Image (cartoon, rainbow, N blue to C red):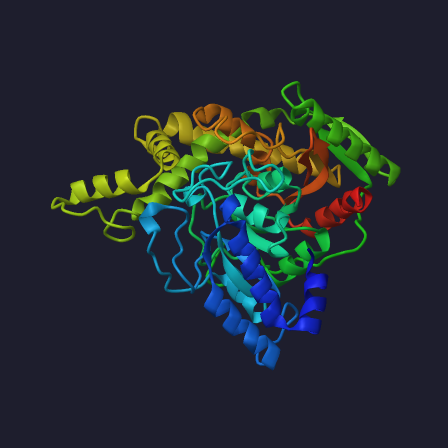
Length: 461
C-alpha cells in the first residue's frame, strides 16, 4: 500500500470509505495484537469533513497510525504500560498536529514495548505483537506495532520513535522501510520521553517516496522543543556526493547470520553496478557503542520515569498511606520487568560512588564515537551494514536473557548515539524472513540517504 494508491481510492470512493476500510483491517489484525486503540468515531468524523471539503491538504483522507507513546486526543495514551492505562492526554503531539494540518487521519495507536524499552514488542503490558510475515516470530521493537501495521497494509505509513534502533529493527524484521532522521529533525513535543539525548521521531512506510512525503510535513523547527533544528529537509531524486560508500567491518563479523551477510553482499553489488566505489573500513569505537548505550540511556530513563509515581502521573496503588509506600507500590505494580531493570541500571550509574566511573566515562567515549563517525563520513556518502545480526527470532526465545536481547541493538545504537540519519530498507531474505540494509549518513544529510536507499529499493522491485 502506498499514499498515491490511497489518494486515488479516496478520489473515487471518498475518504469515509477509505477510513472505514482501514478501521476494519485494524480490527481484523487482532490476532497480531497491533492496535491498542482504534479512533473510530474521530477518524470517521474527520473523513466526513474531507469528503465535504472542510478539511483539505496534501494527505486529505489518508489514514495513518501512531506508536502509543504519541499523545493524541482520542482515547488513552498508555505507552503500553499499566501505569498509564487510563491516561487522557491534555494535548496532541506536534507530529500528529502537522499531519492533521495536511488532512491525514489517525485511525489509532499501536503497540510497543512498555515505555519503548525493548527490541521485540514482547515487553508490552498489553501482550506481544506478532511479526507480519511469520506470527511465531517477534515484530521487533520497540516500534513493533508501527512496523506490522504497515506490513499488513492497514495504513500506508505510521509514526514511531527510535532511541537505539526502535524504528529500523522492526522495519527490517517486517520488510518495510524504517527511517530515523537526524536527531532534532522532528519535534518530540507531545511524545513520552525515553532517553532525551537520542529519542528521535521517524516514519515507517512501504517505500521511500512516502517516507519523504511524510518527513517533508513533520520536519522543522518547533519552539515547543528546543532540540529541534531549522527545517533542512528537501527530498532529492538523485543522490549527490563522492560516489563512495563504506561497509563497516565491525557490522559483518562472524556473529552475523550467514543469510544476513549474503543480503549485505548482494546490496554491495547493487551499488557497485550503480557506479559507487565500495570500501571496507574499521570504526574501532563501535565495539564500545553498546556498552556506552546501556550506561547513558538507562541513566536518562531513570530520570524521565521518575515522574511516574502515582502522585504526578500514573495509576496510584490503592489503600496506602505513606508517601514512600505509594511510590514503591505504584512503581512495582505499574512498571514491567524491563522498565525496572533499566531504572535500576540508571540509578546505579548515576549514584555518587559510580557516576565518574561509569556515566562520565561513557559520555567521553560517546564523544570519541561521534568524532570517529564524523571523520569517516567526510570521506564517504554513506556507511552501510546490516540492521540486526539476525532476522526476526522466535517469540520467547530471548526474553529470559536480557544480555542476549541487548545484543540485537548492536548495529543500530551507534548511529543513535551520534545523532545520525539512518534507514532500514528492505534488501532481501534469510530463510524466508525479511532483512533490511542499514544506511547511515552525516548529520542533516537525510535526503541524500533516502536517495541512496531508493537505488536499492528500485532494484528489489
